[in-house]
Image (tube, rainbow, N blue to C red; front, top):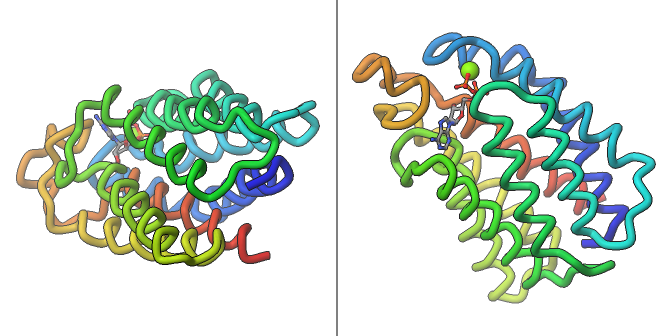
Amino acid sequence: MDIDLARAWVRAIAVAVGQNKDHLTQLDSAIGDADHGTNLDRGFSAAADAVADLAADTVGVVFTKTGSTLISSIGGSAGPLYGGAFRAVGKALDVPVADQRTFAAALAAGLKSIRLLGAAAPGDKTMIDAYAPAVVAFEERSRQGDGFAGAASAAADAAEEGMRATTPLQARKGRASYLGARSVGHQDPGATSTALIFRALADTAAR
Ligand code: ADP
Ligand code: MG
Protein backbone atom coordinates (compact mmCIF):
# COMPACT_ATOMS: atom_id res chain seq x y z
CA MET A 1 0.00 0.00 0.00
CA ASP A 2 1.51 3.29 -1.09
CA ILE A 3 0.25 6.88 -0.91
CA ASP A 4 -1.37 6.77 -4.36
CA LEU A 5 -3.24 3.56 -3.54
CA ALA A 6 -4.34 5.06 -0.23
CA ARG A 7 -5.78 8.11 -1.98
CA ALA A 8 -7.38 5.94 -4.67
CA TRP A 9 -9.04 3.77 -2.01
CA VAL A 10 -10.59 6.77 -0.27
CA ARG A 11 -11.81 8.07 -3.65
CA ALA A 12 -13.25 4.62 -4.50
CA ILE A 13 -15.08 4.51 -1.17
CA ALA A 14 -16.59 7.93 -1.90
CA VAL A 15 -17.76 6.74 -5.32
CA ALA A 16 -19.21 3.47 -3.96
CA VAL A 17 -20.96 5.21 -1.09
CA GLY A 18 -22.36 7.80 -3.51
CA GLN A 19 -23.71 5.04 -5.77
CA ASN A 20 -25.23 3.19 -2.80
CA LYS A 21 -26.41 6.21 -0.85
CA ASP A 22 -30.12 5.49 -1.31
CA HIS A 23 -29.69 1.80 -0.50
CA LEU A 24 -27.85 2.62 2.75
CA THR A 25 -30.49 5.14 3.71
CA GLN A 26 -33.27 2.64 2.95
CA LEU A 27 -31.62 0.06 5.22
CA ASP A 28 -31.27 2.70 7.94
CA SER A 29 -34.90 3.75 7.53
CA ALA A 30 -35.99 0.20 8.42
CA ILE A 31 -34.05 -0.05 11.69
CA GLY A 32 -32.68 3.45 12.30
CA ASP A 33 -33.27 7.07 11.37
CA ALA A 34 -32.67 7.00 7.61
CA ASP A 35 -29.46 9.03 7.61
CA HIS A 36 -26.68 6.48 7.04
CA GLY A 37 -26.44 7.03 3.27
CA THR A 38 -26.46 10.82 3.45
CA ASN A 39 -24.09 10.77 6.43
CA LEU A 40 -21.49 8.64 4.70
CA ASP A 41 -21.89 10.31 1.33
CA ARG A 42 -21.16 13.70 2.88
CA GLY A 43 -18.26 12.35 4.93
CA PHE A 44 -16.46 10.32 2.29
CA SER A 45 -16.80 12.91 -0.45
CA ALA A 46 -15.33 15.47 1.93
CA ALA A 47 -12.56 13.01 2.82
CA ALA A 48 -11.78 12.21 -0.82
CA ASP A 49 -11.54 15.95 -1.55
CA ALA A 50 -9.39 16.52 1.52
CA VAL A 51 -6.83 13.87 0.57
CA ALA A 52 -6.82 14.59 -3.17
CA ASP A 53 -4.29 17.40 -2.93
CA LEU A 54 -2.93 16.72 0.53
CA ALA A 55 0.86 16.83 0.72
CA ALA A 56 1.43 13.35 2.16
CA ASP A 57 4.79 11.80 2.93
CA THR A 58 3.36 8.68 4.55
CA VAL A 59 0.42 6.39 3.82
CA GLY A 60 -0.78 7.09 7.33
CA VAL A 61 -1.27 10.81 6.72
CA VAL A 62 -3.90 10.02 4.06
CA PHE A 63 -5.91 7.88 6.46
CA THR A 64 -5.47 10.18 9.45
CA LYS A 65 -6.82 13.04 7.36
CA THR A 66 -9.67 10.81 6.15
CA GLY A 67 -10.54 9.97 9.75
CA SER A 68 -10.52 13.53 11.03
CA THR A 69 -12.59 14.67 8.05
CA LEU A 70 -15.16 11.94 8.75
CA ILE A 71 -15.33 12.94 12.40
CA SER A 72 -15.89 16.60 11.59
CA SER A 73 -18.35 16.08 8.73
CA ILE A 74 -20.57 13.15 9.75
CA GLY A 75 -23.24 13.36 12.39
CA GLY A 76 -24.54 10.21 14.05
CA SER A 77 -22.58 7.25 15.33
CA ALA A 78 -20.93 6.30 12.06
CA GLY A 79 -18.81 9.50 11.98
CA PRO A 80 -16.85 8.91 15.17
CA LEU A 81 -16.77 5.13 14.61
CA TYR A 82 -15.41 5.24 11.05
CA GLY A 83 -13.44 8.40 11.75
CA GLY A 84 -11.72 6.86 14.74
CA ALA A 85 -11.05 3.69 12.76
CA PHE A 86 -9.39 5.53 9.87
CA ARG A 87 -7.32 7.56 12.32
CA ALA A 88 -6.17 4.35 13.99
CA VAL A 89 -5.35 2.82 10.59
CA GLY A 90 -3.36 5.95 9.75
CA LYS A 91 -1.48 5.94 13.01
CA ALA A 92 -0.32 2.38 12.31
CA LEU A 93 1.03 3.31 8.86
CA ASP A 94 3.72 5.87 9.53
CA VAL A 95 5.66 4.82 6.42
CA PRO A 96 5.77 5.91 2.75
CA VAL A 97 4.96 2.35 1.63
CA ALA A 98 3.33 -0.23 3.89
CA ASP A 99 3.95 -3.93 3.39
CA GLN A 100 1.06 -6.35 3.60
CA ARG A 101 1.67 -7.40 7.20
CA THR A 102 1.83 -3.82 8.38
CA PHE A 103 -1.37 -3.06 6.52
CA ALA A 104 -3.09 -6.10 8.08
CA ALA A 105 -2.06 -4.83 11.51
CA ALA A 106 -3.40 -1.38 10.63
CA LEU A 107 -6.78 -2.85 9.63
CA ALA A 108 -6.85 -4.65 12.98
CA ALA A 109 -6.07 -1.38 14.76
CA GLY A 110 -9.06 0.20 13.02
CA LEU A 111 -11.32 -2.60 14.23
CA LYS A 112 -9.97 -2.25 17.74
CA SER A 113 -10.79 1.46 17.70
CA ILE A 114 -14.42 0.73 16.71
CA ARG A 115 -14.71 -1.87 19.46
CA LEU A 116 -13.25 0.46 22.09
CA LEU A 117 -15.48 3.37 21.15
CA GLY A 118 -18.72 1.50 20.45
CA ALA A 119 -18.35 -1.39 22.91
CA ALA A 120 -20.08 -3.73 20.48
CA ALA A 121 -19.15 -7.39 20.12
CA PRO A 122 -19.44 -9.65 17.09
CA GLY A 123 -23.09 -10.69 16.67
CA ASP A 124 -24.50 -7.39 17.97
CA LYS A 125 -25.60 -6.50 14.40
CA THR A 126 -23.18 -3.66 13.70
CA MET A 127 -20.38 -2.77 11.28
CA ILE A 128 -18.16 -5.06 13.37
CA ASP A 129 -19.95 -8.08 11.92
CA ALA A 130 -18.53 -7.18 8.51
CA TYR A 131 -15.23 -5.66 9.66
CA ALA A 132 -14.05 -8.47 11.96
CA PRO A 133 -14.30 -11.30 9.39
CA ALA A 134 -12.65 -9.05 6.79
CA VAL A 135 -9.59 -8.59 9.01
CA VAL A 136 -9.39 -12.34 9.66
CA ALA A 137 -9.64 -13.09 5.93
CA PHE A 138 -7.00 -10.49 5.02
CA GLU A 139 -4.60 -11.91 7.62
CA GLU A 140 -5.26 -15.54 6.67
CA ARG A 141 -4.81 -15.02 2.95
CA SER A 142 -1.66 -12.97 3.56
CA ARG A 143 -0.24 -15.79 5.68
CA GLN A 144 -1.05 -18.25 2.91
CA GLY A 145 1.11 -16.18 0.57
CA ASP A 146 -1.51 -14.31 -1.43
CA GLY A 147 -0.59 -10.82 -2.60
CA PHE A 148 -2.29 -7.62 -1.53
CA ALA A 149 -5.04 -7.79 -4.17
CA GLY A 150 -5.90 -11.40 -3.32
CA ALA A 151 -6.02 -10.69 0.40
CA ALA A 152 -8.17 -7.60 -0.18
CA SER A 153 -10.54 -9.59 -2.37
CA ALA A 154 -10.91 -12.28 0.32
CA ALA A 155 -11.51 -9.53 2.88
CA ALA A 156 -14.27 -8.04 0.72
CA ASP A 157 -15.92 -11.46 0.28
CA ALA A 158 -15.79 -12.05 4.05
CA ALA A 159 -17.20 -8.59 4.78
CA GLU A 160 -20.11 -9.22 2.40
CA GLU A 161 -20.81 -12.58 4.01
CA GLY A 162 -20.73 -10.94 7.45
CA MET A 163 -23.01 -8.20 6.18
CA ARG A 164 -25.61 -10.71 4.94
CA ALA A 165 -25.35 -12.61 8.23
CA THR A 166 -26.56 -9.53 10.13
CA THR A 167 -30.10 -9.92 8.72
CA PRO A 168 -31.38 -12.58 11.17
CA LEU A 169 -29.65 -10.96 14.16
CA GLN A 170 -31.29 -8.82 16.82
CA ALA A 171 -29.47 -5.52 17.31
CA ARG A 172 -27.82 -5.07 20.68
CA LYS A 173 -26.01 -1.78 20.01
CA GLY A 174 -26.87 1.55 18.42
CA ARG A 175 -30.21 2.96 17.41
CA ALA A 176 -31.47 -0.35 15.97
CA SER A 177 -31.27 -1.93 19.42
CA TYR A 178 -34.18 0.27 20.54
CA LEU A 179 -36.37 -1.85 18.25
CA GLY A 180 -35.57 -5.05 20.12
CA ALA A 181 -36.90 -8.11 18.28
CA ARG A 182 -38.27 -5.86 15.50
CA SER A 183 -34.69 -5.33 14.29
CA VAL A 184 -34.61 -8.99 13.18
CA GLY A 185 -34.99 -9.54 9.44
CA HIS A 186 -33.18 -6.38 8.31
CA GLN A 187 -29.60 -6.07 7.08
CA ASP A 188 -27.50 -3.72 9.17
CA PRO A 189 -26.67 -0.44 7.39
CA GLY A 190 -23.23 -0.08 8.98
CA ALA A 191 -22.23 -3.64 8.10
CA THR A 192 -23.37 -2.83 4.57
CA SER A 193 -21.19 0.28 4.32
CA THR A 194 -18.23 -1.63 5.77
CA ALA A 195 -18.65 -4.23 3.03
CA LEU A 196 -18.60 -1.40 0.45
CA ILE A 197 -15.38 -0.07 2.00
CA PHE A 198 -13.63 -3.45 1.71
CA ARG A 199 -14.96 -4.06 -1.81
CA ALA A 200 -13.58 -0.64 -2.76
CA LEU A 201 -10.19 -1.71 -1.40
CA ALA A 202 -10.27 -4.93 -3.42
CA ASP A 203 -11.29 -3.11 -6.61
CA THR A 204 -8.63 -0.44 -6.13
CA ALA A 205 -5.92 -3.01 -5.43
CA ALA A 206 -6.89 -5.02 -8.52
CA ARG A 207 -6.48 -2.01 -10.85
P1 ADP B 1 -26.96 6.77 13.78
O1 ADP B 1 -27.33 5.40 14.29
O2 ADP B 1 -26.44 7.65 14.85
O3 ADP B 1 -28.05 7.37 12.97
P2 ADP B 1 -25.68 5.92 11.34
O4 ADP B 1 -27.05 5.71 10.81
O5 ADP B 1 -24.78 6.74 10.48
O6 ADP B 1 -25.70 6.54 12.80
O7 ADP B 1 -24.96 4.52 11.54
C1 ADP B 1 -25.66 3.39 12.01
C2 ADP B 1 -24.73 2.20 12.01
O8 ADP B 1 -23.69 2.40 12.97
C3 ADP B 1 -25.39 0.90 12.43
O9 ADP B 1 -25.98 0.26 11.34
C4 ADP B 1 -24.26 0.10 13.04
O10 ADP B 1 -23.62 -0.72 12.08
C5 ADP B 1 -23.28 1.15 13.48
N1 ADP B 1 -23.24 1.24 14.93
C6 ADP B 1 -24.12 1.87 15.74
N2 ADP B 1 -23.74 1.76 17.03
C7 ADP B 1 -22.58 1.05 17.03
C8 ADP B 1 -21.66 0.60 18.03
N3 ADP B 1 -21.88 0.89 19.33
N4 ADP B 1 -20.57 -0.10 17.66
C9 ADP B 1 -20.35 -0.37 16.36
N5 ADP B 1 -21.16 0.03 15.36
C10 ADP B 1 -22.26 0.72 15.68
MG1 MG C 1 -28.85 6.48 11.28
